[in-house]
Image (cartoon, rainbow, N blue to C red; front, side, top):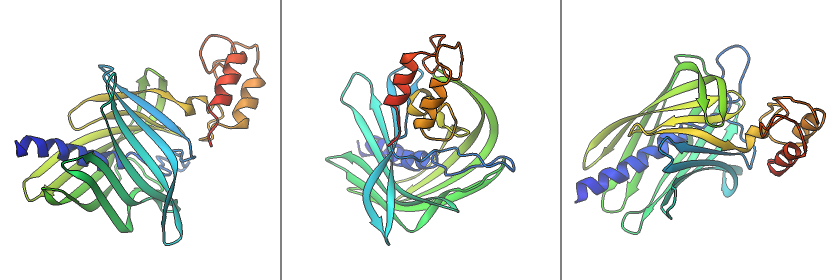
Length: 275
């Protein structure tokens, strides 16, 4: 029984590093820098599996974590099985600077048997450089420990393998960065290897993910759908943009896609202001 159970949790722990590799501060495929992960507090993305059985919810949140006088931001990923109370979560404590996104701490909630897995990286690991071009690769190594299992080491190698347009239930996103994440997990029980793929849209973020079991998740909702100005945050500028087009059949201002820019569009933008 230990083998299959531990394999399940290995996959969950591997997903921490796969998901962590989704977060980028400012990727670039040309001389013009693009922000592939808008990091304003309150930003939310919801991806749904093709069979509509699962959600992945990504959020950017404030945290109480401070390391060396650095206030860390919480990047939280929650996997939900729809129609049930079953969910798992990973918490990534990060900081952003001119080099890119820095990871200081990872917390994975398992269960009563295996407890909580934590990886602390100090000095912090660089998950994404500030700029990238097609073909660039980067690597991260981190260590953790699980009850009844002992120490585990993760080695994650990411590579930008393509620039693609992605069609999702929430819309079509052009020139998305496709990142291949290859992970090796080493423990006293086994060595496992896995591969996942992530697509990030310029100035928007998560739009598609394929996990290690080849389950495909696509964007169904995000408050950044209401970021009509494309500056990475939903704010008064977006409200002004929509208001200026009130009464028009304008696709950019018509955020609910009902054919006309009206009061419903203004309400949706206002309700989705980032904190």
